[in-house]
Structure formats: structure tokens, C-alpha cells
Image (cartoon, rainbow over all chains, first blue to last red; front, side, top):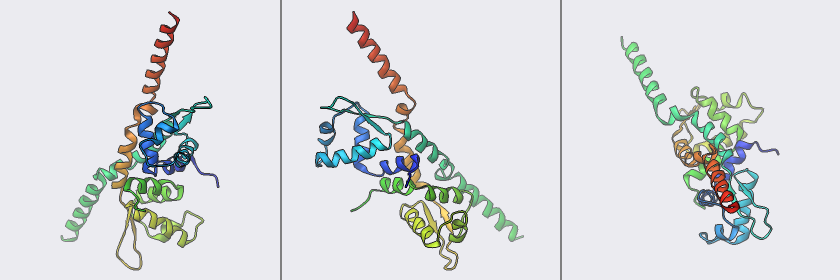
Length: 112
Length: 112
């Protein structure tokens, strides 16, 4: 099944280790060994996470065969953030307050 | 395994049907039948998506046994958006430009 880019981005971010890897890369590129160091995790396990991040376009890997340093590519996050932004009025509660206000008006009218 | 809330939020959003359900609910509460209507999908399939959204705290369901209307709860999206916001300087390219600038400086120095 073809996975749409936005789903792939969200799925890649749905793991604390992968988010920690991205956080680490935000301070500069790193090799797989450097990325694995803070985690009690095997290199193949870290490599698997890197593949998920790479497929989602969230990192790119250098071509130097020995090192292949990883580098953050944040571009796909922009669409994810844009999608979430649509819902800001809801989490900020302004829609809840409007709803409560409309209910209060209706109840007031019903009581007349 | 215990899944952290942020991972649960991102995982719930990693599906176009679930995002479409949330979009529909942003214009008001709806029953499972109403939510299923635009999708060529069985009610059990839609119910499964709703369970994922409910476990992630992105919707809540009414208590009226027959209808159990679904309602958007956007609160968990705030943390997800906050997490993504940290990376804005990267997707806006300001870090890339800084990087390019530093490289140019270094190359300039190398050529001196």
C-alpha cells in the first residue's frame, strides 16, 4: 500500500527513540555509532530507526561509505505542523468557549 | 509496552482516514454512521479507527447508548505541534543558510 507523505511523517515521529535521534541531529550531523551511544540499543536497532527516518525524508545520510553521517532534514515537519495548526482554535479552547456561549444563549432563550 | 502520549498522538495521526475523521469532527460532533458515510469502509473498520483516536485522547464519545456521538478533543495536538515547532528554524531554512554561510567562510579561509 502506498503511504501518503504526511502519514509517513507522523508514523516516523511516533517513537521516542526516533524523536531523540532527531533532537540529537538538530545540534549537528552524527554517525550511527554516535547516535547509538546514548541508547542501550544495538546498532542494527538504531539502523532500523534511521531507515524509517530516512524513508520519511526526515534525515539524509552522507555518501562516505565508512561513516555515512546522518543529517536532519526538517522539511517534512512543515506539512505536519501545518496540518496540526488548523486545530489550534480547538486546543486553545476558543471553540469550546464559543460552544458554551451558544449553549448559554439557547438555554436563556428556552427559559423565556 | 507503555506508549508515551506524544507517540500515541503521532501514531493516531499517521493515517489519512483518521485525519479525515478529525477534520469532519472539527465542524461538529457526529455518529459513527455519519463518520462512515464518506468512506467506502465498513462500520467495524471505522469503529477501529475511532478506538485509536479515542485511546489517543483525540476524540471522546457520548454516553447515549444508541448514538454515542464522537466529538473532537484537540488537546493532545498541542504537545505534538509544540514538539514540531522546535524544528521550525530548520524547515524555514535559517539553519541551512547559516550552514551555507559558515561553509563559504571556511572555504574562503581555506583559499587564502
